[in-house]
Image 1 (cartoon, helix red, strand yellow):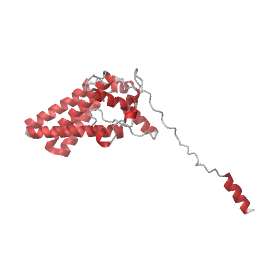
Image 2: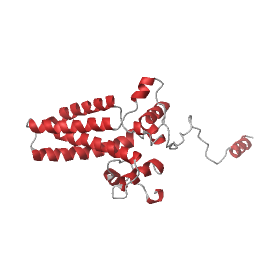
Image 3: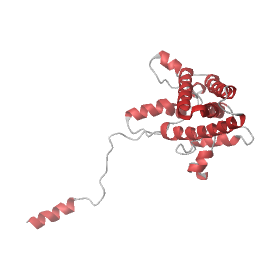
Image 4: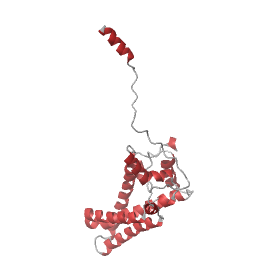
Length: 232
C-alpha cells in the first residue's frame, strides 16, 4: 500500500521546472516621443524649476572652469605647464565620471517602485522625450550647487592641484552638456562629428544597455560597451 502511494505521488509530480511568479511585472521599455514634455511634479514651482535653457548650465560650468584656472595661475598655485597637465587630467577624469554616472546611476535597474521613480525622474523622462530641449540639463539652482560642491571636494582632496583639475573637469561638464544638447536639437553634420550623433542615437533607439559615453566614446571602447554592428 505504501509503495502504491509513493508511485502515485511520483506520477503526479511534473518533471518541468515550476514557474516562478514575480511580485511585479517587468517594466516595459519607454517608447520615445518626439513631441511634448512629461510632467514630473504636481507642484507648479517644482515643475517649472525642472526646465532650463541649456545656455545657463553650460555657462555656469564654463565660468567655473575659467575662474578656477585664472585663480590658480594668478595666485601661484600652479605654473602654466602644470596647469595644462592638470587641466587635461581633469578633463579625462570627467569623461570617466560621465560614463559611470550614465551607466550605473541614470540606468539603475528599476527593481523597486522607489528605484523606478528615481530612474525615471533622473533619466527615464529623457529617454521618453528625447527632443525636450528644456530637460537636457540640470536646472540652474542645482547646477550652482553641483559646481560649488565640486570645488569643495576638489579643494579638500587635491589641495592646490584642485584649481587645474577643477578647470578641466568643469570644462568637460560644459562640453558634455553642449554636445548632448546639439545631438538632440540639431541634425547630424556631414563630417567626422557625425560619430557623436550616431553613437548616442544607438543608445536611445537601438541598444540602451550600451553606448554610455556622450562627449566621448573612449570608455565605451575601453570597457567594452560599444554598440554592436547588428544593432546599428
